[in-house]
Image (cartoon, rainbow, N blue to C red):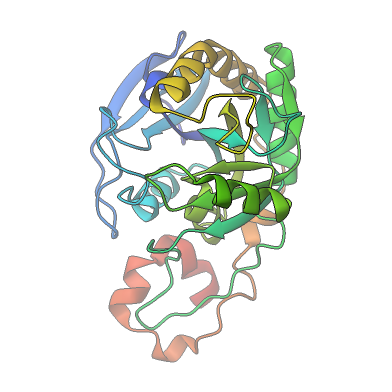
Amino acid sequence: MEGNPLLGIIGGSGLYSMEGLEEIEELELETPFGQPSSPVLTGNLNGKAIAFISRHGRDHQLSPSEVNYRANIYALKMLGVAQVLSVSACGSLREDYAPGDIVIPDQLFDFTKGRKRTFFEDGLVAHIGVADPFCAHFSTAVEDSIKKAQGTVHRGGAAITIEGPRFSTRAESNAYRAWGMSIIGMTTSPEAFLAREAELCYAVMAHVTDYDVWYLGEKPVTVEIVIRILNSNTALALQAISHLVSNLDENHACTCTNALNGALITNPQVVPAETRERLSILVDKYLS
């Protein structure tokens, strides 16, 4: 692989077999927050460098609550990635977002309970702005790539992240619908917020696998249903990623790349040296 990866992808292990990926390397990285969920696969796709992390591990041995989201995002930042695509499964909370469709959400509701949500602790505080938690420009590029792959794509809607690993009760599912949520999953939070803290453009390609449990016209969601739809959509996801890589603008200026500007509130003179060193690739340009 030559140069920094243009694109970082976090998704399922089915994406390991990317057709056309060349000069493949596996990197065992160690971050200040531990190891990523899997070795980082790097290579060249359509002449451009990319990096991939299997979110739940190669054999899907990590539950959503056990994923080291901080290490995954930090590892991509270490490699010089600027744009991160999340490929994930989701349940639909709307009748018009059908199984097999793809959703690119524009809003996020964090309903998780026990996860590390920030890089900033141990003497350095940052209040990051996430009114719009996904990069609009990058999301448009993802949408265009799915259309080129002839997938059915919906732009917009609020994604709610639950703790898992269990699926929802009907009461919960109907409550989320009443709140105005569009899709439901278990991994976008805190991933999106950490990406913003790392000043990375972040977008989600959410594959609708089911109607959760609210829709009485369908069977309640099961692992079998999720896997079946994901397997059928893997080829589509790979085609879309190929189009995305070919058409990404390497020189696009985005406000995501300066998200920490004005967010750091701690007096630089009192930031502990260990904390500053741990977060150096995030904060050096602001604390120097």
